[in-house]
Length: 214
View 1 (tube, helix red, strand yellow):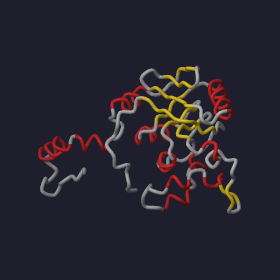
View 2 (cartoon, one colour):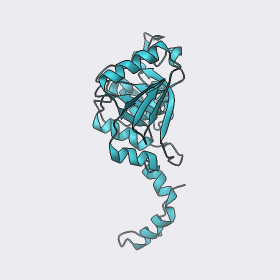
View 3 (cartoon, rainbow, N blue to C red):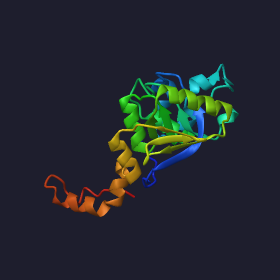
View 4 (spheres, rainbow, N blue to C red):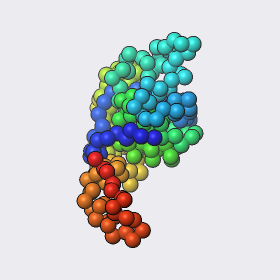
């Protein structure tokens, strides 16, 4: 699959935005990105297919679906339930969410592979308690313009006058806040070093191995 994000990885410390509430448990990658759309050779259009089979029934848009509802059209932080991203390991699911506009996910827990895939494309996926998710969902449903802030330095989720602690694997947190979450961008920033190492590897011909990171 081609079409990486093609931008240098940035330091991700604070993710701000309005929310999209979808708090059901066990939302799987097959629902997030249906398998038939994986035939495309790039990720460019994956945002169009997020939750496609839930958002469209008999050719008609399901307006009340949170990913269709105009109330949440500016949302960039998804609020989910427990075991989010379970099912197949397809990278297309977080790629689709990213291209839909999602930059942060707040859930009770995640499937491990989905969690890792989010980290590699710069989606901040944090965990808060079920009770705190319920309170956040109620607030966002009442006022969709509510600003939700995920602070990776402080490990908090805040909105209005409420601040709750959140969890995220420490390795992921460090990669996001240090801007080292995308291995491709790390290679771009260190192209000279990569080339120098390539010349010292006895099993590679540097004349044949000319990495193009740009």
